[in-house]
Every structure is written in structure tokens, then in C-alpha cells.
Image 1 (cartoon, rainbow, N blue to C red):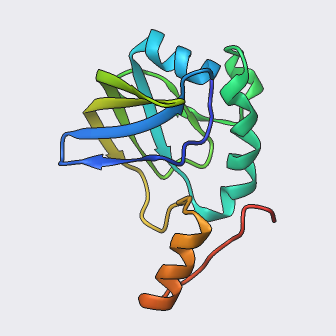
Image 2 (image 1 turned 90 degrees about the horizontal axis):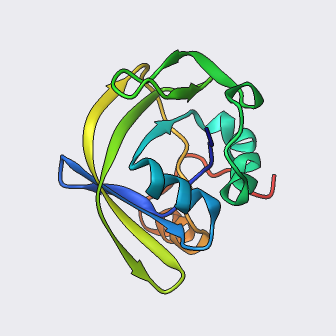
Image 3 (image 1 turned 180 degrees about the horizontal axis):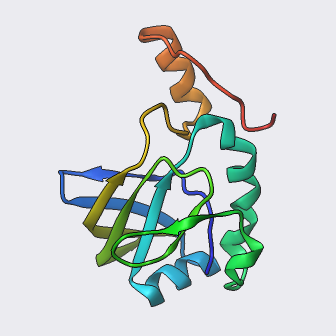
Amino acid sequence: MNMFPTDLHGSFHNDYYVTSLRIEGKACAQVGATGKIVLSEVPPVSNKKVYALGKNHMKELSSKETFDISSASSQTYKFPLPKDVMGYRELEIVTHLDVGIHRIFLFRVQNRVSLQEGSSLSHIHSYYAQWKKNNSGIVEVVPRSE
């Protein structure tokens, strides 16, 4: 298995999800070969653990024992989940499009599970964070460098 963060992704209507991965990354090849992923939501306090997984974009598949995972698995695919999972989507690739250095995947949402309520970690870029702060306010921003 592999577990890594993504920052360029989002819902497309109710039944679809879009994400972008670097074409040259091993994570991109792994997602393409599997055809299915589980996208998990975790609380903001998990930010350091999540960002530490960024190196996995360029790593081979590993044993699930090398990850901090929950005792539960996803309902449909039976994929491992991160220990602090709040909810997740099980996604299956419909198609992809290469744009520059990125492969944009279009997934169909196969299953959506909410395990607990609360704020989940979201990665936003600094320009957008400043715009939100100036225009509508942000409750909490945790810089990635911390």
C-alpha cells in the first residue's frame, strides 16, 4: 500500500471527484495501476503526520505495518485507513487527462463514509489563505512549515 497527501483535488458534482498527481511520481503510477483509491479526511491536528507522508509520492508500495493505520478498513475496497480518519470516500477512476507535469484523474465516488463530525484538514495556498482572511475570515491557519 501507499499513503500520501494531496493538495489539488475536490468534488465534482455529487458523484465525481477530481485529483491531480505529478505524472513522474510513483504515487501517480500506483493510482493508475490500482484504478481505485480511498481519500481520507483527518483532523487539523494531524497536519504534521500528513505532511510527513509527502515523501511517499516517490516511494514504492510498502507493507501496511509501516503506516499509522486504523484497525478498521474501508467498507467497499477493504483498504487500510489512517488511524485518525474522520471520514473517507472510496473512488474509482473513470478517466484521466495529462496537463503539463500533472495527470488529472476523474473518479466516480463509489462510497462515502462519515465517522465523526468536526473540522478536517485542508491544504490551501498562502495567497488564497490571505484572500479568505481579508474577505471572509479564517478561523484557524496552521502554516505548513510548523
